[in-house]
Length: 166
Image (tube, rainbow, N blue to C red; front, side, top):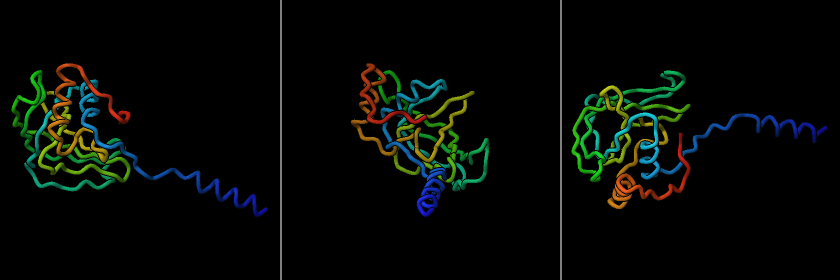
C-alpha cells in the first residue's frame, strides 16, 4: 500500500509540465545563417538603438495570439552587411518588438552595439526581441563580425556549435 502511494505521488509530481525556459547561448553565426535562410526578408546590421519614446517593460499577460508583446519606436544607426562586409551606413527608424514566451520576456536592447537580424516588411524595419535574443547578439567582437562577413561573401560558414532556435 505504501509503495502504491509513493508511486502515485511520484507520477503526479512528474506529470506537471516543466516551467523553465531553455535558451541556447547567443551565436553570431547562427544569427546570420538563420536570417539568410529565413522565408522572411532580413537585413543583418551591426549597430545600436536610440529609443524615440519612453522605454516600457513588457509584462507577461498583454497577449496577442497567446504571447505578450509590446512595440517601441527607435532609431537604428550602424552598418549593414553587404557584399563588401559591414560597409553600408544606415540610420533609420525601426520598431523594436518585445515578445514574451510564457512568463519570460525580451527587453529593450541597451548595449553599445549589437549584431542583429532586422526584418523588412513593406518598407518597415522590425527587430523582434524574444527572451532568448535569437535575433540579436550584444557587443560582437571584430573576429565575430569578420567571420560573418566571410560567411556572407565567400560562403565559408563555420558550423554553429548549437542547433538553431526556431
